[in-house]
Image (cartoon, rainbow, N blue to C red; front, side, top):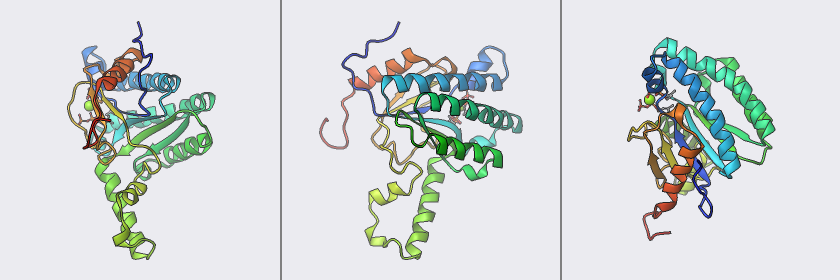
Length: 241
Ligand code: IPE
Ligand code: IPE
Ligand code: MG
């Protein structure tokens, strides 16, 4: 049974911290990597559901800068899944008019993965439907550090004057330059933290946490999050909007 979203405001930008793949597998006595595989299936489904709902931007946290600390076996399995799903995603994106962008520091990946990311972005660049953003080797602090480095070098080169730097200038140096800030953040699996996700961009985002484990996430769960979002009184430091 779906929820009734008639008359509901569909958030323009939904950001997701997909969490709980490992717990989902553990509950079933399966290896963590099986949870990641199921999690990828859920990502694919969520992209299609979000596109149909009219969400304009969906930003999913796929792999954090801290996730390299996991076992070599798990990191290796995640990289293999990434390779496999990039190929599938190219087909899905092309068939559904979806534009794919990646945020995070891609330079740390193997060459074939970097090429796959570049190809996904360039071949879907002109699509006008949902923008699907995948955060890989992404960390909010790393993103800000890279932005500061770039801005400092532009200052040194005389391209930017320090006294002219505004919030918009900083935003334009982030990986998310040109994208609106998320309206709604969904975190699955109950953890009440940001885990280094979109630290600048989430400043006024509504946060929705569900106990649902990511591989179990579906259309009904997304609709529940949107209903909850519609009940919020959004404030941006001032009066209710
Ligand atoms: C999220 O699931 C996927 C990634 C971080 C890559 P986890 O692997 O963090 O699952 P739990 O938190 O151990 O259940
Ligand atoms: C956040 O999940 C990162 C991703 C979803 C890629 P984690 O499972 O890595 O975060 P912590 O360790 O619970 O903070
Ligand atoms: Mg986790």
